[in-house]
Image 1: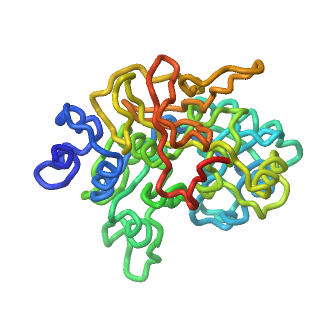
Image 2 (image 1 turned 120 degrees about the vertical axis):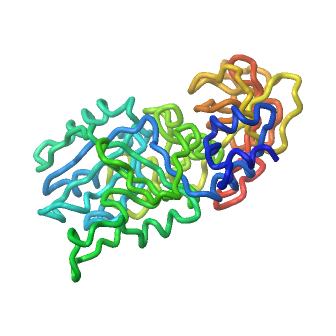
Amino acid sequence: MAFKVAIFPGKFRKFTTAKAVAERSPQAPVTAAAFLAASNSQDFYSRVPRRSLVEVEGQDAVKFLQGLCTNHMPKIERGGDGMYSAFLTAQGRILYDSFIYPKNKGTEFPHPSFVVEVDSGAVNSFVSHLKRFVLRNKVTVRRKDECGVFQVWGPNAAQLWETYVEPVAASKMPAGSVVPKRFWDVGTRDSRHPELGLRMVVKNDVKFPVPPQFSDAGEETYVLRRLLYGIPEGEQDFFSGLSLPLESNLDCMNGVDFRKGCYLGQELTIRTYHTGVTRKRIVPVQLFREGDPVPDVCTWDPTFKDPLPPSQSEIRISGAPTTGGRRSNEAGKFCSGINNVGLALMRLDQLDSGSLVCEGGLRAKPFVPSWWPHPVPASS
């Protein structure tokens, strides 16, 4: 299959990005399963696009963030890996999806200091959101523009995190020195999906210190993998002030601790969790043109160049009536995408539908992610 030429190592190693696949194999759509399997067979890294960082520092930093985020700050208050989380409105709607990383190095470690990663388009409003709640808490909040976010994945990614130490000259590390056990000071294993690998915060003026067998896959490949796995990220996928945590899969991606105490927006989140009812979820979708056969397997087509529906635009049930002043044909809302694949917030009772229409006329077919912990019922 031509796609394998573009992703596998050896003499074809230079064709490793999603862009290169499209350029070298212009007539070769590939299934999501085949693309993900191939991209997981080799060691890659990529800068993560559209992500910015904010530092929260001070003796009350743990207590301060604990009252605002959906995950449990005591998990990371002593250092180590970061964690996935979100910040909500008082009504329990998502404002910002985030990673929160403890700083694991410094002369005053473990002085409470955390780096919070959010969407670049929302970083200024996020800083303002935090400062609203500082009050008498002894914390400082500032943007950390000198750093960026990288993702690392592949067969050796886990081993890299556990055992790899960048080689140094013997004169800089004499016999008996303490050997660091972490590959990088600020980062985490990505808890959203096992195959996403590692996520790290790196200074912009520092060369990314991975072993030479790791290739730069490019930002588009990272985004494409995320979409095919069904992982939302950023303002286009989380509708700020509108999206609910469980509808956005935060429970499946280890972004909510249901045992922690009170935090902003907790009441609706806990009530939804204990009732066990959510009628919508974010899922991968494949777009296709009217008249094309409805796909039965999610397939990425790099030649698909039709304009994508806008984020938050409606996905409708074709032919369904409109009654009682409400649009009974609403099936979901489009989030974001690349070529003919993307994410959408869908009603669970429409996941098997083959007659869904997006804004602009494209058709959409949703697919259930294989990593979901329970089968999706036919109706809810």
